[in-house]
Image 1: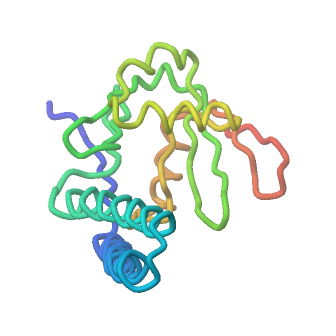
Image 2: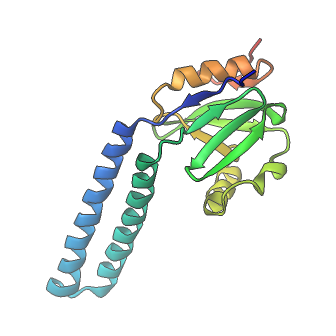
Length: 182
Protein backbone atom coordinates (compact mmCIF):
# COMPACT_ATOMS: atom_id res chain seq x y z
CA UNK A 1 0.00 0.00 0.00
CA UNK A 2 1.38 3.38 -0.98
CA UNK A 3 1.76 6.04 1.63
CA UNK A 4 -0.27 9.18 1.02
CA UNK A 5 1.96 12.25 0.86
CA UNK A 6 0.56 15.77 0.93
CA UNK A 7 2.78 18.50 -0.53
CA UNK A 8 2.61 22.25 -0.02
CA UNK A 9 4.56 24.33 -2.52
CA UNK A 10 5.75 27.91 -2.42
CA UNK A 11 4.24 30.32 -4.89
CA UNK A 12 6.78 30.79 -7.70
CA UNK A 13 5.07 34.06 -8.57
CA UNK A 14 5.65 35.55 -5.09
CA UNK A 15 9.21 34.25 -4.99
CA UNK A 16 9.79 35.80 -8.43
CA UNK A 17 8.61 39.19 -7.16
CA UNK A 18 10.90 38.94 -4.16
CA UNK A 19 13.80 37.95 -6.45
CA UNK A 20 13.11 40.89 -8.78
CA UNK A 21 13.08 43.28 -5.81
CA UNK A 22 16.30 41.80 -4.52
CA UNK A 23 18.00 42.19 -7.91
CA UNK A 24 16.82 45.81 -8.04
CA UNK A 25 18.48 46.41 -4.67
CA UNK A 26 21.70 44.84 -5.97
CA UNK A 27 21.72 47.26 -8.93
CA UNK A 28 20.89 50.18 -6.60
CA UNK A 29 23.79 49.21 -4.33
CA UNK A 30 26.15 48.97 -7.33
CA UNK A 31 25.10 52.45 -8.45
CA UNK A 32 25.36 53.95 -4.96
CA UNK A 33 28.73 52.34 -4.29
CA UNK A 34 30.06 53.86 -7.53
CA UNK A 35 28.71 57.24 -6.43
CA UNK A 36 30.27 56.99 -2.95
CA UNK A 37 33.63 55.57 -4.07
CA UNK A 38 34.31 57.72 -7.14
CA UNK A 39 32.07 60.82 -7.02
CA UNK A 40 31.68 61.70 -3.33
CA UNK A 41 34.85 59.85 -2.21
CA UNK A 42 33.26 58.56 0.96
CA UNK A 43 34.81 55.13 1.39
CA UNK A 44 33.09 54.18 4.65
CA UNK A 45 29.55 54.60 3.32
CA UNK A 46 30.62 53.08 0.00
CA UNK A 47 31.90 49.98 1.80
CA UNK A 48 28.61 49.66 3.76
CA UNK A 49 26.65 49.93 0.51
CA UNK A 50 28.86 47.25 -1.10
CA UNK A 51 28.15 44.93 1.85
CA UNK A 52 24.44 45.60 1.38
CA UNK A 53 24.77 44.71 -2.30
CA UNK A 54 26.57 41.47 -1.47
CA UNK A 55 23.83 40.59 1.02
CA UNK A 56 21.06 41.15 -1.55
CA UNK A 57 23.04 39.21 -4.15
CA UNK A 58 23.31 36.28 -1.73
CA UNK A 59 19.54 36.49 -1.06
CA UNK A 60 18.85 36.57 -4.81
CA UNK A 61 20.92 33.44 -5.37
CA UNK A 62 19.02 31.58 -2.62
CA UNK A 63 15.67 32.69 -4.03
CA UNK A 64 16.60 31.61 -7.56
CA UNK A 65 17.68 28.21 -6.19
CA UNK A 66 14.26 27.82 -4.57
CA UNK A 67 12.52 28.84 -7.79
CA UNK A 68 14.53 26.39 -9.88
CA UNK A 69 13.86 23.37 -7.63
CA UNK A 70 10.55 21.53 -7.74
CA UNK A 71 10.82 20.39 -4.13
CA UNK A 72 7.79 21.31 -2.02
CA UNK A 73 8.24 23.62 0.95
CA UNK A 74 6.41 21.23 3.29
CA UNK A 75 5.44 17.58 2.87
CA UNK A 76 3.34 15.45 5.19
CA UNK A 77 3.42 11.68 5.34
CA UNK A 78 1.70 9.33 7.76
CA UNK A 79 4.78 9.32 10.03
CA UNK A 80 6.69 12.53 9.26
CA UNK A 81 6.43 16.23 8.64
CA UNK A 82 9.14 17.07 6.12
CA UNK A 83 10.41 20.65 5.91
CA UNK A 84 12.44 21.70 2.90
CA UNK A 85 13.97 24.76 4.51
CA UNK A 86 16.75 24.42 1.97
CA UNK A 87 15.68 22.50 -1.16
CA UNK A 88 18.57 20.02 -0.95
CA UNK A 89 18.45 19.42 2.81
CA UNK A 90 15.02 18.26 4.04
CA UNK A 91 14.35 17.87 7.76
CA UNK A 92 12.15 14.92 8.80
CA UNK A 93 10.19 15.48 12.02
CA UNK A 94 8.18 12.62 13.50
CA UNK A 95 4.56 13.50 14.25
CA UNK A 96 4.81 12.15 17.80
CA UNK A 97 7.59 14.70 18.46
CA UNK A 98 5.33 17.62 17.49
CA UNK A 99 3.54 19.02 20.54
CA UNK A 100 1.65 21.68 18.61
CA UNK A 101 1.97 24.72 16.41
CA UNK A 102 1.63 28.45 16.81
CA UNK A 103 0.51 30.68 13.94
CA UNK A 104 1.98 34.16 14.49
CA UNK A 105 2.83 37.33 12.62
CA UNK A 106 5.91 39.53 12.70
CA UNK A 107 5.60 42.78 10.76
CA UNK A 108 2.78 41.43 8.54
CA UNK A 109 4.73 38.24 7.77
CA UNK A 110 2.73 35.16 8.77
CA UNK A 111 4.52 32.12 10.21
CA UNK A 112 3.59 28.76 11.64
CA UNK A 113 5.94 27.85 14.47
CA UNK A 114 6.30 24.15 15.26
CA UNK A 115 6.43 23.40 18.96
CA UNK A 116 8.51 20.25 19.42
CA UNK A 117 8.59 18.10 22.52
CA UNK A 118 12.41 17.84 22.36
CA UNK A 119 13.92 20.65 20.29
CA UNK A 120 17.46 19.51 21.15
CA UNK A 121 16.85 16.27 19.24
CA UNK A 122 16.14 18.17 16.02
CA UNK A 123 18.71 20.93 16.43
CA UNK A 124 21.44 18.73 14.92
CA UNK A 125 19.22 17.85 11.94
CA UNK A 126 18.94 21.50 10.96
CA UNK A 127 21.15 22.56 8.04
CA UNK A 128 24.25 24.44 9.22
CA UNK A 129 23.28 27.48 7.15
CA UNK A 130 20.16 27.98 9.26
CA UNK A 131 21.40 27.19 12.77
CA UNK A 132 22.25 30.84 13.53
CA UNK A 133 18.83 32.03 12.42
CA UNK A 134 17.24 29.31 14.51
CA UNK A 135 19.19 30.36 17.60
CA UNK A 136 17.96 33.93 17.12
CA UNK A 137 14.36 32.68 16.84
CA UNK A 138 14.67 30.71 20.07
CA UNK A 139 16.27 33.66 21.91
CA UNK A 140 13.33 35.87 20.86
CA UNK A 141 10.85 33.29 22.18
CA UNK A 142 9.77 31.75 18.87
CA UNK A 143 9.95 28.06 17.94
CA UNK A 144 13.08 26.60 16.38
CA UNK A 145 11.31 25.46 13.20
CA UNK A 146 8.99 27.86 11.38
CA UNK A 147 7.03 27.69 8.14
CA UNK A 148 6.59 30.94 6.22
CA UNK A 149 2.88 31.10 5.46
CA UNK A 150 3.00 34.11 3.16
CA UNK A 151 4.93 32.34 0.40
CA UNK A 152 2.76 29.20 0.30
CA UNK A 153 0.18 28.62 -2.42
CA UNK A 154 -2.33 27.13 0.06
CA UNK A 155 -1.63 28.31 3.63
CA UNK A 156 -5.16 27.50 4.84
CA UNK A 157 -4.81 23.97 3.49
CA UNK A 158 -1.59 23.58 5.48
CA UNK A 159 -3.32 24.70 8.68
CA UNK A 160 -6.17 22.29 7.98
CA UNK A 161 -3.76 19.38 7.51
CA UNK A 162 -1.91 20.31 10.69
CA UNK A 163 -5.22 20.31 12.58
CA UNK A 164 -6.00 16.83 11.23
CA UNK A 165 -2.61 15.39 12.05
CA UNK A 166 -2.06 17.10 15.41
CA UNK A 167 -5.53 17.03 17.01
CA UNK A 168 -4.04 17.44 20.47
CA UNK A 169 -2.15 20.59 19.53
CA UNK A 170 -2.35 23.81 21.44
CA UNK A 171 -2.91 26.74 19.16
CA UNK A 172 -2.95 30.49 19.82
CA UNK A 173 -5.89 32.22 18.15
CA UNK A 174 -5.85 35.73 16.65
CA UNK A 175 -7.29 37.13 19.86
CA UNK A 176 -4.32 35.76 21.81
CA UNK A 177 -6.44 33.27 23.77
CA UNK A 178 -5.10 29.75 24.00
CA UNK A 179 -7.32 27.09 22.52
CA UNK A 180 -6.99 23.35 22.28
CA UNK A 181 -7.99 21.72 19.01
CA UNK A 182 -10.17 18.66 19.36
